[in-house]
Length: 184
Image (cartoon, rainbow, N blue to C red; front, side, top):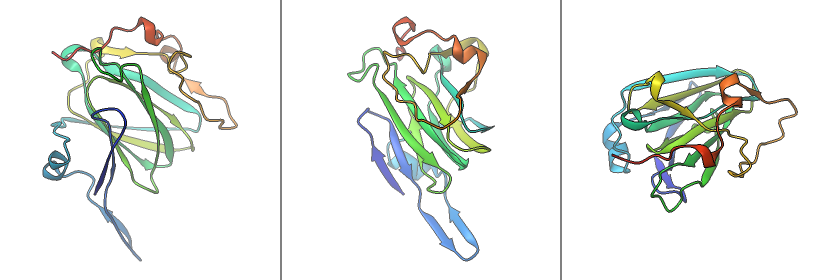
């Protein structure tokens, strides 16, 4: 597998090895030792999956306090623009974001450490998105930030259709109004 460090400390793109032949393909999507050797030491305890239509926007979300989560995400069918924003108060890249196109065809993974807001924009109908989390979800600790906040400078692709946000994602606060993440 190839691990690509991004310009934000801790955020990584992983390209698993795919073995293809006339039958299809095989790949190892997670191996604790190999990922630990690559600097990903999160102990995953929960897996989530969503299926969405083209134009759906999910996020930006995170879990606060003791329920903060690191995530290892990938697309099983279709494609997305995956977005993370550094909300770590003492980080030199506080407020910076990274956008990465993830596709089922290429099979890339995106590792997101604790202390990041996360979301994605769906590029194709019936896109299936999967993610491993290193902490359990807690509704009371769920937080969100407006993905379209101009202060973030996130470029939204022209999909030729309207974006579809959940009601709560439409009313999240902007970046300047959130409580930054502080590692305890």
